[in-house]
Image 1 (cartoon, rainbow, N blue to C red):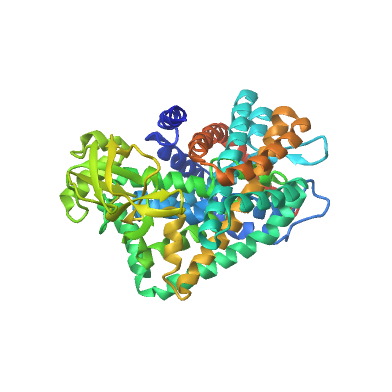
Image 2: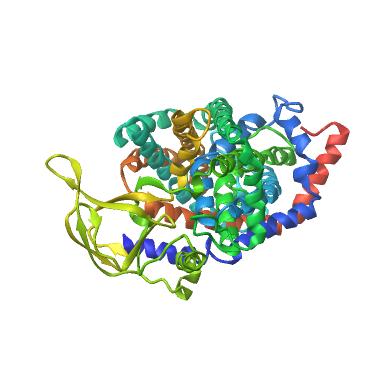
Length: 563
């Protein structure tokens, strides 16, 4: 298993974590923004009118309405990334990461406009009469590059499990267990049954569920977020200042946070932005290809709204909740995750600038070798769970851990008890994987967001907004991604493979509630870029086609023929 993880990390180094990737993603969005004359601004009003059904006709070819297609695509993008992903971006890259998420979203509005328009234009009607579209169809039907379409379709299937399925239910199960003490397997089986009932009905049932659930879950989350933000109203302007100011300061180190360099903050912000709104990935184009309409550009305009709603509204609200509440700089009592813990040699603190700089260098993968900080190997003596020897510092979640206790599970009483004795650390990690470590440190992901939601008018009850929001966001994401994988299977194998895919999808959804999905996440991070790179190449090759399609739309619109 460790070999697989290392192999995926190595491959990711040439893909999503490579230096060129943020510039490529932003560059393509910037090119089309200028080339098409800022469509995310000029066509925004038209997009709203189209979604409201002003130009819709019942006899237009397609399976769903514009609003249903938008809701389906949003159900795929509005997910754990909006709750835990934003917190993760701030934890890794500081407030500056949010600025780069904004940049990715603004330019991504144009990228999504392009990929959706072209996918809708070159869609096909399948054997059962439903529409099938997506980047793989324009790659084959227009570019005559079926091999590229095959790569994209395979990556889509992998991503459907790696981002839309297994990590989603794993997060749901963990949150339901933490909040309501519900066993993981019950959550997994129960939601798997609901998932099966929805996806077996195909795109029409998926769209019906999405257009009912998505507006409700978005409204619930937005109201909950505003209750926290306005409770901390005096920190609203300082929060925006932190986001903008940290971009130009060259570093995002603030308070106890170890910070990140400008380049690292940019990379993590762009990558989290892509994970959140999927602009450039080509996934949402599959949902929009099912929309009714004769003018591809009209559906492309509808998709402009996705990054705006997903990132510029929902992700920004999450960021403001976290920043205005101040929880991102505070250390909280928690149980340390094994992947967040690093034992380093020597005594270090996050209370002076020199130590912070060395620790930051150590924690950033590409600058690790230039740091004076080195991994610790050796023995640690414990008395009643507390260390009585020194010579090391425990880092957890990018901060120096405090008030640390080492515990073990008593198999007779099923209770945790403090350890007295000696434990061994090798190359920065505990050798005994059964030891449970608790203490105060920074926290990240959904835990950080949940803590932030308790700092508002609702107090401790605010965490339920996060729990319910995560449940709805993640479950609808799983529904949408089942459709994306469904269409990719049809492209590769035809309808004969669809039912097999759906069964496997539901089974893996149930299983992932109780297993470690670390490798799945790593595989998904590679697959996302394997979708994005072919898609970006394809839309760049079709830039003239895109411009002509938009021109044709406006020519028809002036004649009263566009809808």
